[in-house]
Image 1 (cartoon, rainbow, N blue to C red):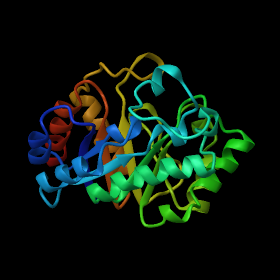
Image 2: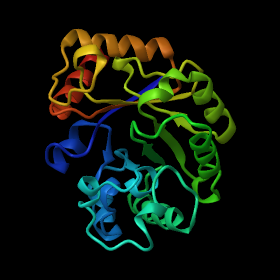
Image 3: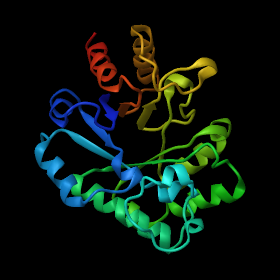
Length: 247
């Protein structure tokens, strides 16, 4: 089994990430995709074996939210109500095309979609997900989706989505968010541990946590695992986990 360890975003210099980790999930593309020339420069700076994954633009997954959308640096076409919830229309296709420009500039093979907790497992939202991920332009990529909230109580739907549109379900495996169906790729985004299994980005993983993480991954036993730390101590914890894998 191949295990690739990285972080969601750069916490230290790019040089340190490139030298000591396997992969980084680019976060800027979630808020407003940078100029592709900037991303192509990152690709040139990185070793050939270093991998980038790309987090898809929030306009595809998230409804209008004043606090979140204020991070946009450009005007967007049409009414904000046209965006979010995996709606399939000319506006979300435009947002997807901008995301794909970023992925191609980075030579990224994996696109990561993360939906908010407010995107619940309703019949309409299920249809949106299935229709969106049938989009032809996605077929050259490996697609990963991290649902939040109630979707994890509907493992039957997660299995249906995985099988029907050939996407991989991602979650925080240390918080119990792991697909019960078998996937040959496991992508886990680790957001820290709080009370009652809540997210706590300020959490620093213990040695026991990292041992449990290793055990979970090896028990699930996919062909490839991506272990992506997304807490305040992400870089340090990723380095420690790589050492854990050597033991």
